[in-house]
Image 1 (cartoon, rainbow, N blue to C red):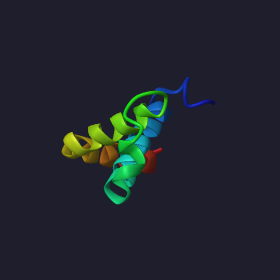
Image 2 (spheres, rainbow, N blue to C red):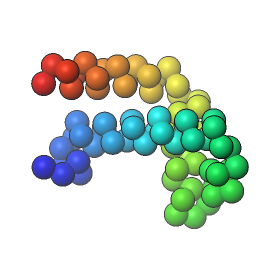
Image 3 (cartoon, rainbow, N blue to C red):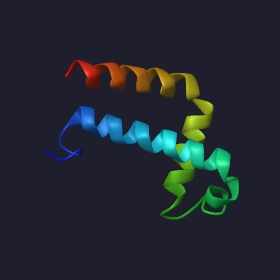
Image 4 (tube, one colour):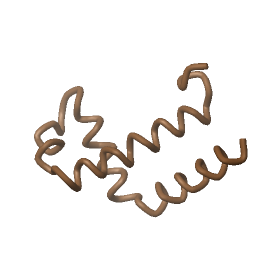
Amino acid sequence: MSALFNFQSLLQVILLLICTCTYIHATWPNLLDKNKTGAFGIFWKFARIGERLSPYVSIGCFIIAFNTLRS
C-alpha cells in the first residue's frame, strides 16, 4: 500500500522528511537557505519545523518507533 493511502505511513514519511531536512540544514545550511522559495522551499520549511518544534518532533519519532516495533 502506498504511503499516501495509509495514514501511519504518511506520518512516518513526514517525520523522516522533517528529521532529514533538519540534519541537512544543520550540516550544510547553504544548501537549503538558497532555496527558501519555489519547489524546493518545502524542504527549507521542513527544516524550520524541525528546528522550532524539535521536542514535539522527537516525541513523534519515539511514538512512531514504538508503534512500528509493536506491529
